[in-house]
Length: 355
Ligand SMILES: Nc1ncnc2c1ncn2[C@@H]1O[C@H](COP(=O)(O)OP(=O)(O)O)[C@@H](O)[C@H]1O
Ligand SMILES: N[C@@H](CCOP(=O)(O)O)C(=O)O
Image 1 (tube, rainbow, N blue to C red):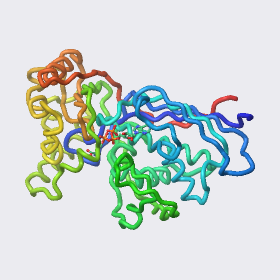
Image 2: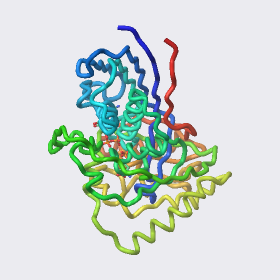
Image 3: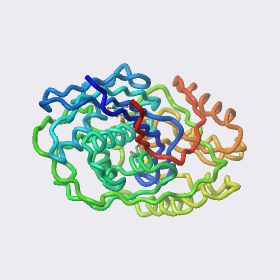
Image 4: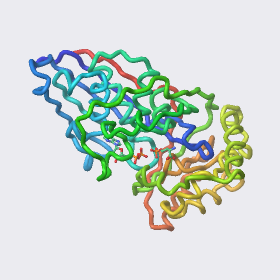
């Protein structure tokens, strides 16, 4: 078979929430999901068109390389189905190289969804705008923080417009959070039309000297589990507590030199972290014991996404900060991997490669 086109899709990991910004804030960091895709000349029948997926890196031992089961290809097939294209229109070879650890709160599923929607867009020659691509990502992932950051890049605040459940809950949509769950039903129904203008976002400024230390425990917490422990309703005090901090934080993280006391207090949260402590041994102790006063250079500390990774924002003394958090996890019998990551400006990229 002749290779007709060759592309690379590169999507960054993301850390969401940043303390009080539950389901609002996302930040892209320098760790990536990369797809190298070879597209062959279309064959006579779509049904015979074959997809070969190979996979290396994080998740290689557990992620399915069947196009019907893999979140990346399922997302691409969903985009195609929404445009009345059944299956991949041409034979494909996809090599996935993934550096984003899974189930750790670093947006691996968001990156997979963004990569899949971009793949569907390219393969189907759909030429969707970034905003339309975001609509598809949001229908699959449902919360906007990870996918918006991964697609757009940088420090991003996002909200969704209110949607009708008939547009969002159909079993034909490959919802990323329930993909592995048993109750997901197979269906051949045509997916409902994706509403336009679902996601709204703004890129926020980020002070260049602030880096992100990710202390990544060696166990997974599925986002669906970490969301299931959250209450349906909150007190007015708790909502106001988060709103006040969120508003201050979005600007505090843009100011050079950064104000550690302001940022540390503005990264406190009452909406999700307290409820997730049972899933992450040592969490309350870590969040309350590692402070700018005890660890100069530290600006703030929070759960990354739904956890279990801890995200420490800092401009200096990265090793000392990381060591304290690593030791606190070790006391709970938990091994960790530490990464000092840059906050990146670029979101997902699709690059045409030479043949
Ligand atoms: N590169 C990938 N390829 C296929 N599926 C992926 C990939 N990355 C993540 N996923 C899917 O997303 C799940 C993890 O998502 P989630 O629980 O939301 O954690 P995270 O915090 O890493 O996003 C995995 O179990 C897998 O089903
Ligand atoms: N706002 C979401 C973010 C989930 O991020 P992930 O990286 O853990 O997938 C949440 O807190 O549930």
